[in-house]
Length: 202
Image 1 (cartoon, one colour):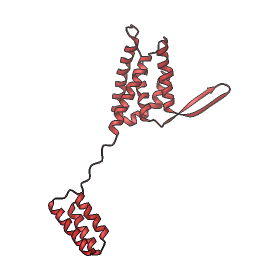
Image 2: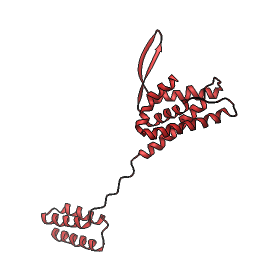
Image 3: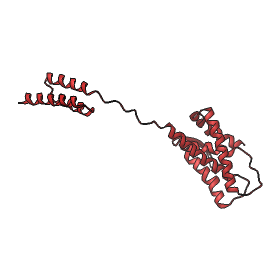
Image 4: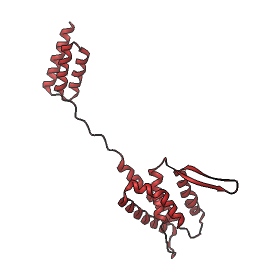
């Protein structure tokens, strides 16, 4: 229980802040359901009951793995009496070790010690899937298409540039007028102004 609460304290507050209280509660319950399914799949036909919240907590760890890829956590390294220190370690490294060393490898080796490895794996995978869905919803959508400036505004600007003798700027505005999806009247006006430019050059 102490280990579960420690992991929940370290990782859970970030997920709650990201999802909100109700979202976090729904995510927690969903991870618990997925953990139970994972346990059922790996345990097969058994009369041994599953008790505990570690499967749901594993879902929180899976979500943290995906949503906070650059975060680091403090890890106590105690090799008495040679080395004792607290170091910062990437959270993904710790969580990856938890999934691989503490759960996947024991399952592959067929370890039987009363630990619900299937629940941990199922919860973690559910956390990854839920976090991927959350991250996809948070991605900004395509920027709204800004309406093209009206062709008439560019035509007026082109006339003003011509009056100042700024031919290059006039060409630019005429080009923008054509790019604005002009009608036949605008195209005719552009041809007229281009004719005025050609007359000036002669």
